[in-house]
Amino acid sequence: MVNRVVVGAHYGLRDWLAQRVSAVVMVAYLALFGVALAAARPVDHAAWKALFGRGWMRLATLLFFASLFLHAWVGMRDILMDYVKPVGLRLALEVVVIVLLLACMAWAVEILWKT
Amino acid sequence: MPDASLRKKRPLWYNLSPLNLPLPGLVSILHRISGALLFLLLVWLLYLLEASLASAERFEAFKRILAYPFAKLVLFAALWAFLHHLCAGIRYLLLDIHRGVDLATARLSSVAVLAVSLALTAVLGWLLLW
Image (cartoon, rainbow over all chains, first blue to last red; front, top):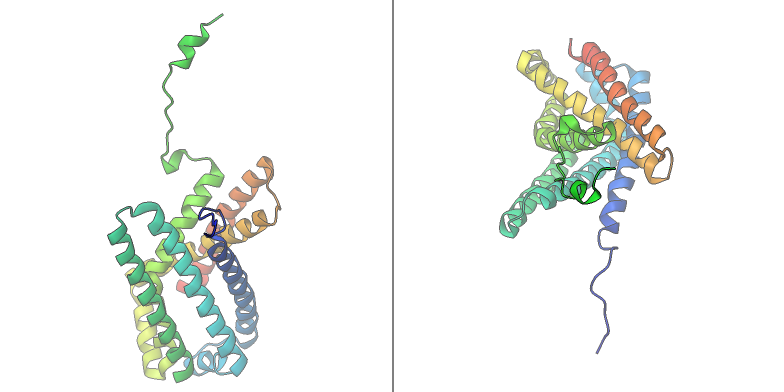
């Protein structure tokens, strides 16, 4: 028989870390985006589109969105755990959040690569 | 000398109203509220980005949307939510690495978060939305 202790404080560590790493990635992207915006100063559609046209900018923006959606998932999960007590309802809302964020991720890819 | 046993019987009454919170607590609950608000606006904000990038015609439609006072109002709220969430988030990252954890500094930084995010909202809102 395996003497396994099934309690512990480390179960949330991965989410805790993911929330902070994604936050740092987003802050870094915002700094990059701010510099790119100040350098290009897009005033019309063509210039605005060209800003996202470069390969590295697309990749950085996609990384930003991936971080944003992961960050949003951890945050929304925290909120649902705190305020929605019925397990069935909470599970349903968590599924809604996950599906919505996955759809947003696919949409973000389409927005960035269609243009 | 007052009787200690009488004092013990006094009920504890915590006022948990957000308006009665100490400032770091106010920053904390606003961090949660702003995060929830940004989540709720996520699809609309992505839609705006899509419209702005898709084509020159859609870009004009995007500009027409931004001309609506109600759209401006919602974007203004989103701008504050984003800036508050960003400033408070940077404060929490610093607290995580044990920077500014003593009471005086933590109070000061919570005031700074509220003030800087409101000031940036006013400035950026003025520049971008008007």
